[in-house]
Each structure stands twice: as structure tokens, then as C-alpha cells.
Image 1 (cartoon, rainbow, N blue to C red):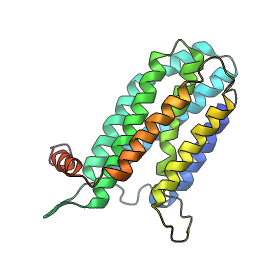
Image 2: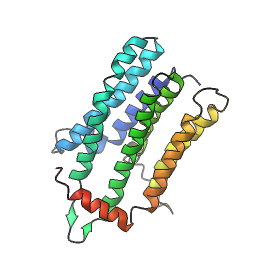
Image 3: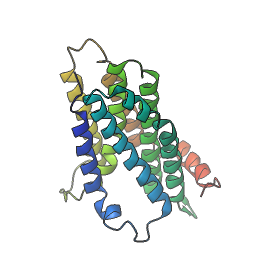
Length: 229
């Protein structure tokens, strides 16, 4: 499968992110929003912008520029990691009883998606000399943005017999499953999306079952007490 149109998919992802974060961020960028939010938002917008730029450079055979702009990621990814860790830390409030379950859950969601992002990015860099694998792992980094964006869209769904989180997780998994089906006859790189799907499913299962464990509770309290923000 060739990804000549992936730039358009990334543009669609940017639109989805703007829609999802419109009410909580884009509609009031200077309305008393914490600077940790700004830093992380700017970093992620730069990442989506880089994905769009890189995709169109490859589409138009500008490989030397593609490699040059790709080196920007070596600086941007650490900023993304640090900005999300600081944002997650800043959002935690320690009560007399510890940390609220909602915050325990969100903290795991933040850190697990960040972990998936780092895993897929590192694999993309490891396979940077293999276009078929490199492109697919880079595309996979963008899939970590689907849940945060979709979860914030006011869909006004009726009461569901299961967690709304299952829907946002399932959307990412369905996209990966469709990519796997489409690529079933490819000879190069078709192992990437099954690997990424397995990684997503692993962390999603933990997110839905492990966030109320004493182990995660202790880790979160330790993390919250670090002098980071």
C-alpha cells in the first residue's frame, strides 16, 4: 500500500483535533489557560504540521527536504514528552484521601498514549532507511491523537451500558484493523500495523482494568509528589 495521500489524512486529523479541542482550548487561547497546556498544544500542533509537511514532500519526491525536516523531530519529540509529563503532573490534585479516581484514570491514559507515541516514533527512526516500515510507524504516531480529540467532541450520545472510552479506543482499533485488511497482500511493511494494534490493545486493556489498582494508586501518588510543577 502506498501512502501518497497520507498528507490529506493528516490534514483531516488536524481538523478533528481543532473540533475536539475547540471548546476547551481553541475558542479561548488566552482565556486563563495554563501555560503547560499551551506548551503541549503548540508541540502537538507542530507534530501534526510536520507529518503533513513530510507527507507532501514525499508525494512530490522532495526526499532531501524530507530528510532535512525529519531531523527536526529529534528536538520536537523530547519537547512533546516533557510537555505532556509536566501537564499531567500539573493537573493532579492531592486530596486528604489521595488522588481522585478520575485523575488516576486520566493520568494512565495520558502516559499510556505518550508511551505508544514514543514506541512508534522510535521504531520509525530505527527503520528510517526502510520507507515501507518508516512511513507506517510515522502514521501510527498520529493514531495516538484520535482518542484525546474524539473524546472531547460533544456528541450528546445516550446513556451507554459501557464506558464511553470503549468507543474512542474502538475507533483507533478499527482504523488499524482496516489498514491491516487493506494491506494483507503487501510484501513489505505489512507487519507494522498488526504490531501497533497489539500495542494499543495492551495499553487499552490496562487502562480499562488496572487504573483502580493499589500499584497504580501508589505510583500516581509518588508521581504527584515529585517537584516537577
